[in-house]
Length: 401
Image (cartoon, rainbow, N blue to C red; front, side):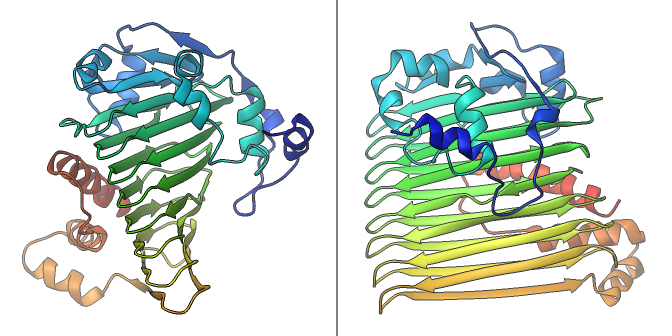
């Protein structure tokens, strides 16, 4: 499908957005796909940073080591297949059919590096037709060593009429100060199916993070994406794209708490390919210290009878932080209804004073206001909503210092 020459040339191709990273400065570890085993304490501690209980994890990746877990046995009762991607490519024909169909390996240096040197470490998840998985599917990608490249190629297929809730936590262990994470994710939502995907990021000030995600939603399908990042990081750059078919729905939400000297370039793009497609793209940014945040959001309508709305709100907690809100709407057919709104402001002093008059300290007052600002009425399952609320409480406390 892709010529080796094209992909090799792409190793020198910077991404369109975000700081350019010299990948040659980082170590490449040998890929390792392990058997079911207990998750060690280092990963347990990393997972706890994003509110994940190691006992519920269906897939764990430590650097370039993929670990199956006993949780996969419980999911098998519902017919759900969870495998390391490398193993799935050798055992499952559908995995071979889907791999690298939505993400072009020659897109930039990060996709090319993963395609050529990543060893297909990552998770593969298949949900059979009509199965509504009653429990969340939890995965964790962790970096536990300094100066490494972690690659992950994830493939998810939710078959016709099925429904699943996937939660991925990405974190590092204590003491890791530098490295780069490259996550390639290809999600397929079949006809009348639904996938809810929640991604929770907790990195460190020396880490560079480069997710590359594409989603295809079939007729009558629905995709909900909720993304949270709250830790210091050297840079994050991600711009997932969602392709929406006939009578489909998508809800894309990003919550970003930027800090220190980090560069956070985060957003999402939706392409309304068929009539009846609709999307809501929402973001909240809280910025402090000297961080730079670029909140991107794009909707492109290729057909009439489509709808889309963008809402980008930012809150500055420091006079030296920067937030750039970049909404883009494009209509290529009459009859598409697209809109956007964006606003950036400061924490209102009168609101802080009011809360302090009611007995709150200044820090508590700011935390309450930040928490309220970040609240988004996202269509999340109750079990995941409870977990996200816990993480947002942590984000609010962290954001005010």
